[in-house]
Amino acid sequence: MIAYQTVKTVAYPIFRQKINSVTGLEHLPTTGSFLVAANHVDWLDGFYIATTIGDARGVPVHFLTKSNNYWWTQVAIQIPSEKKDTVDVAVEALRDGKVICNFPEGKRNASDHLFIGKTGTVRIAALAGVPIIPLGIRASSGKNMAQSIMYLLAKNHPVDIAIGAPIYVALPPDGMTDEWLQQSTNSLMATIAPLCNKLI
Image (cartoon, rainbow, N blue to C red; front, side, top):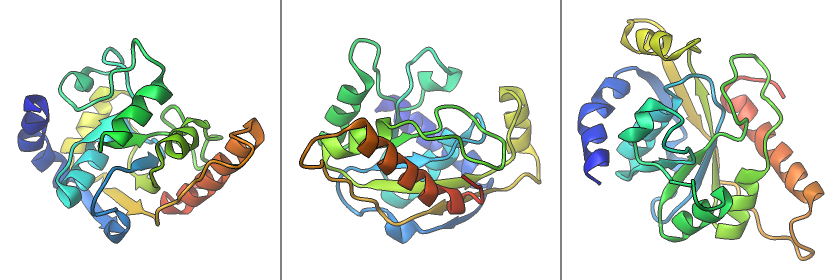
């Protein structure tokens, strides 16, 4: 928690001043865990999302990222998944009351169309019994971390965040088939698309 308090004290004010608008905060659950599903535009998306939700709920946001993937995960709150299946780790964390953010696209995407979503988000939410909170982030897409930091420090390049209504997914009677997972994920991506002004 020392790392989280450091990020909250040092980083949140920097990212907060860059966020131009936030809509839909009323959709965030006031208690309990939930799984945020967001589009992925920029290297610093996680900080903008963590700042927004941290300010609204006063809780750290966990990201499904291995510790050696990005430099900032050494100080940000994260889910360590090196020794266990990512889905199992995420479900366990959600059942423990944590808030997780996942990027169903799987990688950064600067285009005007969302990538086809990966099914892990729906799988995790269904197994953990928590709502999915769709989130759209609109920001300039840095080609690398250095450019993303330049955008962060520049006076222009605003960041806008829109939060959608919770999505509840229940395990189907016949279990999670590949078809059900993909259909549910496609529906989730269709919900995220208008929040970030993208097409599917």
